[in-house]
Image (tube, rainbow, N blue to C red; front, side):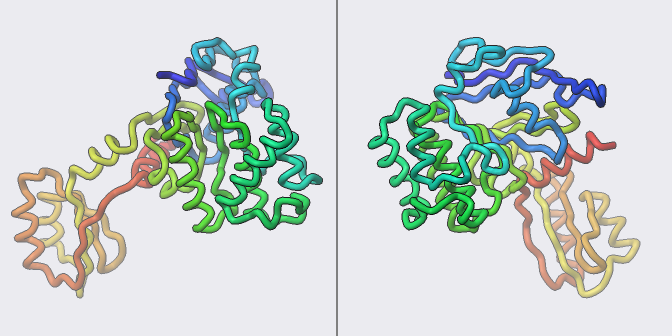
Length: 309
């Protein structure tokens, strides 16, 4: 069932007379974890601000639980947890527990409920000893964790996280992935922007890629990676460079990329030719060979470069 529906939204900032976002549409269903990717300045933050009604779209509509919230976002905000980049969802002079009580109260929790939920969240991230410490005295990573806890305090239907892994160590990122997967299994829809493509690949079931204000790619993570990896790819290291004849043979069956003087990546054009490729490889002075599994980074690079041409 669709939780959030973004329909053909656009935004032009008059000073630059440039469309920051152009005709963007997508959906977040209950239980989805959607990774919203794009280079800096691509339109991610403007899109999030339009969803949250911090910026009004010039065109298009935003629906939440089938209600039009384009210019009346109260139903959305009552049921949404938000972490904007820079942990802007906290009062920095207050402690984590004081923030939980305040933001929980804004979402209808009483003091006891907010304190219990806040403690449970801090336990997940091993931060209970910091519950009464001023946010200003916490490390950048700890501040980020508290911001995520504030967003999750009242069991939201929708969670919007802008660069949530910023400043987190590997252990905290793993805990956050587990927490997001648990929320997803309970029907929470999650929209997350990130530059950490390995994180997006681990946690998301859908990806959106925006560039120059336009949505250039939208697919499930599994389907996109399955298609990407239908083509066999070999990375080989040689004891010497390929000569012209060997390059000619390789090009007949493969797309070839010279990674360095002695390392090459060969993408087999037609899977029917794999036996011929393996025979060709057996005749080369190979020091090391490995198959390559391609990830979201290659999709990101392709669509970012295509749209920058």
